[in-house]
Length: 423
Image (cartoon, rainbow, N blue to C red):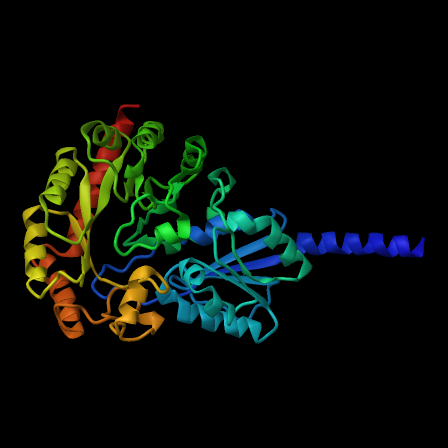
């Protein structure tokens, strides 16, 4: 009987421990692009992860990019995000500080998935896959205090398992710029059939597009107290059928949204505009009639364009900067973001550059797309960095970035007000 009571007491203690678990989520600070208007977007990865924890657990979130980080507390588990490679060094310092006091640390994110053995040197466990796939096992190990190194998966989860992001954990007033609430981030799909240079998505998320149920995504967006939504999927244009279903459902929400590439056929663009498409991110690493026609089509339907410009490819010489800026100004692209080609660690491009001796260093903090971390083929690293600076300054020379952003925002809010007036 005594043994039975002891076993029962142990189970009760375990359940009480389970209900009292304190979890702290941390987004480490990283060096932003020096020429970009300073603003911060709330971390979607951590808030989505938070949705997986049991409701009775106490979960808090600190984003070091918008608030001072408190390292003096002692939660049961600290989860550090290395979404970006540039966050990794700071993330490791944070992890080391907690572990030195006996606090368990879990590290995840893109960089940790690409470099899990490195991340494991600073953590009790590393998530090197999509968390939903290993969550049942991971949660049990958290409760038992038996975190087991690197958590990997051989396949990808169905996206019905994705929980709504815990936006209640956010200090929303910290994600404003000039008093304007920034976007809320939402994910509708994962995976990509394209193998775009130099993307790591096929390696990390698979080469097939997977879909969250549209009704679930719409329910999540409906619950967000923000008119502005950023659909963070790498490429919506992979499925025409999904775009039609998704954009049709979005129409009833009366939001404005931005996204990465969508299809540029008339039916999709008409539906996108009617559902609140504000502007689209368009990758531009070359000047071509295809890109020119796509930008014109977006504009014809009243959809803005933010050009994301990749500098430093092997076919780019020092004349490329002027030719690209002239092209962007000719096409009247509303916003441009210039970035220096920065290979993802442990992915094909990085390995090729490393093998040929072209990687300059692996100071991950400098892998923020504002520094030349490799030797370009047709110019020097210094010329690449100078061309990068010249591109930002010249494109925004006569029409500053803040003015362009303000004009784009005013247009979007006017369109939204017009749509709401028709309800």
